[in-house]
Amino acid sequence: LLRGVLTARAAGLTSAVAGAADARVVVATALIDDGRLLAARRTRPEALAGRWELPGGSVEAGEDEADAVVRECKEELGADVEPCGRLGTDLPIDAGLLRVHLARLRPGSAPPQPLDHSALRWVSASELDALPWVDADRAVLHDLRAALP
Ligand code: DCP
Image (cartoon, rainbow, N blue to C red; front, side, top):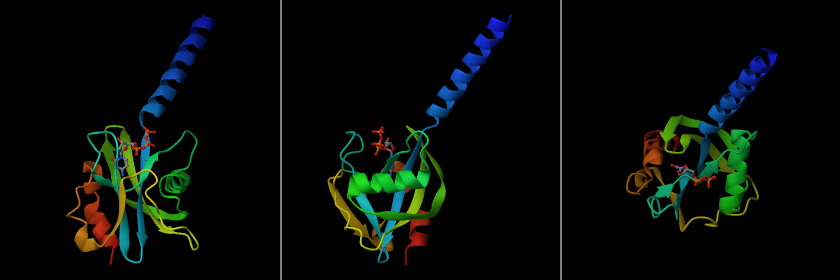
């Protein structure tokens, strides 16, 4: 009996861990500098290549969301950013959940470079709508406009 209970507990634990892994969180960075927002053009997968996004990526196991924002901006843009709060609500994406974080460049940071994208653009509030955004990011345009002068 004891062995059965332990096996059931182990199975329950395994499925709880698997469940947590399924709810993958992707962070996206609304990097604002001098009244404009940084937009980045994706190169992959084929379905999203050429569409514009807020740079970011998957939060790693045990990683804080704000730390993931800092790491992804360093990896993808070569920039040092300071996260400064969430923007909008959780957005469902194929991969799980997308959460947008506002951020600014730290003093002395190198300017963002397209290390992982085919182009970067600083866009003003009036230019937001015209870009072909990936679907999830388009859903936060209203909140982004409110965050820009
Ligand atoms: N995504 C999105 N909008 C963003 C950023 C990401 O819709 N602003 C989506 C696109 C992908 C998923 O989130 O389906 C993961 O994004 P990335 O491929 O950019 O992130 P990673 O490179 O970290 O993902 P992986 O670890 O899967 O390679």
